[in-house]
Amino acid sequence: MLYALYVDATSGLMSGARQVASPNFDARPEGSPIDLIVIHGISLPPGEFGGPWIERLFTNSLPPDVHPYFGQIANLRVSSHLVIARDGALTQYVSFKDRAWHAGRSSYEGRIECNDFSVGIELEGEDEVPYEAAQYDVLAEAIAALRAAYPSMLPQRIAGHSDVAPGRKTDPGPAFDWPRAHRCIAARTR
Image (cartoon, rainbow, N blue to C red):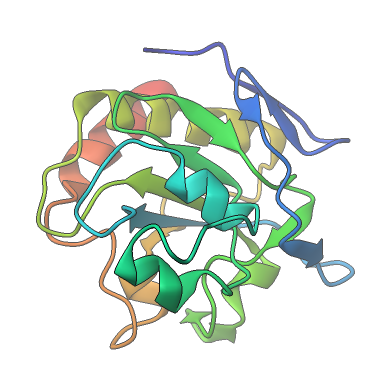
């Protein structure tokens, strides 16, 4: 499932993505360039795919009594700019102009607070479960659209959540095929 993706740099919205507004964002620091992409993996409940639960988490409407794990996380206030489902469906939760709350305590190449200067992209998945071909394709399309809108996003400025929060986070995990992701991205951003 490929999209005709385009980022309107004025609004920070990606055409071709389903839009669902998360309240979990704030303003980026003045003058902070958007120059890093952080790849995440998420499944809710852990190890299960499909269902409305990621969206419910990002919109502060996750019911704590539906699953034991939900009771632990229902009060979290988190978001990501984009989520790519297992089938490649793409949803945007936060404008790229704004700071989504995805990386938490983090640093990259000596800079702290990665949310200030990054775009967070969640892939529906789990550390030990291979990601789907459609997810790599849509990820590459989304990154091509982001790089067209934000030239400061260089090809080497893509990291995993585990890279920016080592010891605290493990996603997207060993099942994420970095060489495949880089090949897909390179094919679309020439």
